[in-house]
Amino acid sequence: MHPSSRSGSTWQDIVAFISLAAAAGLACGIALGGIAVLLSAPAYGAEPAVDHEGGTLVLRPLRPELDPHTAIRVAPVSTEAGFRFDEEMAEARVVLTFRNPASVPYDGVYAMTLPRDAAVERLRIRVGDRVLDLDPVETVTSNVLALEIKDIGPLQAVIIEIDYVEPMGEVRASAPLLVPASPRRPASIAL
Image (tube, rainbow, N blue to C red):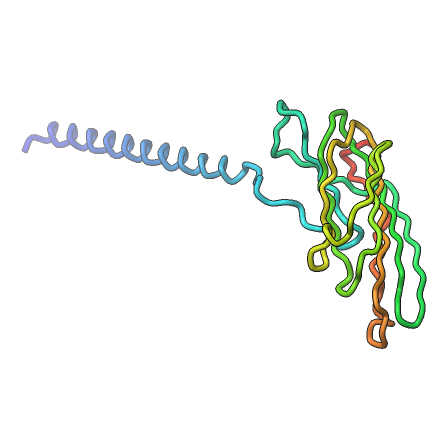
C-alpha cells in the first residue's frame, strides 16, 4: 500500500468522524432545546389551590381577545371577622373585600375551605351595586364553599359576606376557629 494513499484515507476518516459528531451534537441540541421549550410553557390545566386562610378569588377574562387561560389570583384587600361563642356553638361572620386589579372586566370563582363541621347560614356577594343573596346549600360541597361571580367590572370591588356556625363540643372547645389571614397583596399588582 502506498503511504500517501494511507494518509489521504486517514484524513477522510477524520473529516467524516468530525462531521458525524457535529451532526449528532446538533441533533441532540435541537432535541434538548425542544424539551426545554415544552417544559417552560405554562400549565393551563391546574387551578390555584383553595386558600385555607379565608378563601381565594380567581379572575378569568371576559373579552375574547384576551388569553382565556390567563387567570389572576386576587388576595383580599380587607378582612373583617366577628365571633360569638356559647357552650355548644361558635358563630362566625367573615367579610372579605377583593378588587379586580385590571382595567378589563372578569368573571370570578371564589372558593374557601370551611371547618369540618361548619354550616353556612348566610352568604351575600356584592359586586359594585349588585347584591346577591345565595343559597348556602347550593354553594357548599363537603366543607368547600365555591361560587361563580359573573361580570366583575374594571377596578370593581367584590365583597363576600359569610355567616357560619360550628359546634364547639368538649373536644373542639380548644380547637381554633377558622379566621382569615390578614390582607396580603402581591407586589406585582397595584390596587
